[in-house]
Image (tube, rainbow, N blue to C red; front, side, top):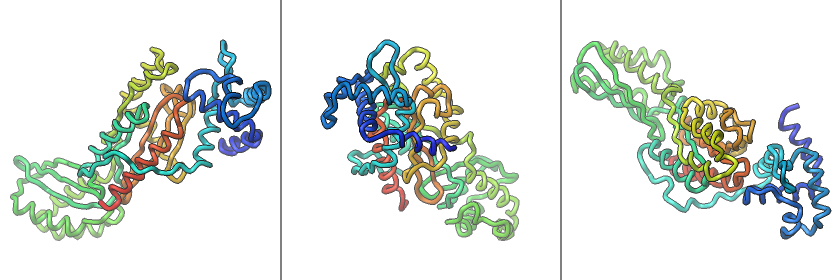
Length: 354
């Protein structure tokens, strides 16, 4: 049985009263970080239940694995299973209205990399959690502009601009030096033939014609086309990951323990570990591509004391990447989900026509 079906089965065991109490426990714990007792829950507006009734329901919830009792406390804290139920309910049932972005989070700048670096800082500041954003991949993107520029000697710079102003630069060593006029002719030929095409649309016949049209520069054209093909392929070594707010984890006692904090900071500083997260979280989520990983669900062991919320951003044709927010298991999931939706909505608005 799949994990989702098991979760559906677990929900059927919960009546409305248990669900109400469970959500109240989780919300209270997320706000305070302290174990929640029956008296605290009984004082909340809208419940109208005695402490004795709440204690019985909490006992059932504990037996069902949704809450835990810390060793010395009379109160209860959510388990990973409880957090999972809460998050699934948020993503399934609650439509969070996308508020209008109030700040100049995404100024109209030419380079997406600048936006993503700035965006990581703003998300970390607004949520008080750690943020990581992967740079865009362009495998299915279309060429917007090509430019061959002369460097010293026989070296040239190939600039490939994709939809969304994603820029890839490559330096080539040619067998012979080319003049400015010769490069201009090649630029005209390349842009006339390739602008607006994706890698799948550039056929072998088209490349053969380009080499033929280049005449005595056919060997140069062959080398240039190989470099352009490489620009389409987002090599893992070239994947940019922008992080911010890693030290925010020290604000949460359950993560500020020396060893845990050290492992978390280490994970944020190692690109390979972050790449593993992005590689394993590229499965479609809900309509916004939002996914939530709690505790041991995280693909990186050093982060399994945390929760991770990810979402895929996408604009243009084939330009996509991932936004990730890392915090304690008691993170404010609703606020994080709303922040992600706002960011993605604004990115779509600012870049869809560029």
